[in-house]
Length: 104
Image (tube, rainbow, N blue to C red; front, side, top):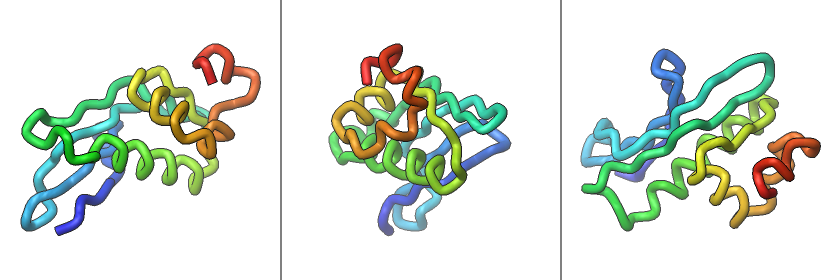
């Protein structure tokens, strides 16, 4: 089964699920949500799933969802911040006045 990203609001995180039945959590991106903003604070991929590009899929899925929901993104997490830096088409999600703070 193809990996998929899902929001788990009860855990305040996006998860990337994989495995034969698509239920094994390979990693997550924790966030704090408030008043139209989503602050990403930590991203982690289980070492058993390293090297498969799942971190990038997780970042893209979470940021795509933030865009659909109209949320401004605050990338405190170094992984999410770095991913946005490599994919400038996502920089517009970060409020313009705060991009310099994040090196974007």
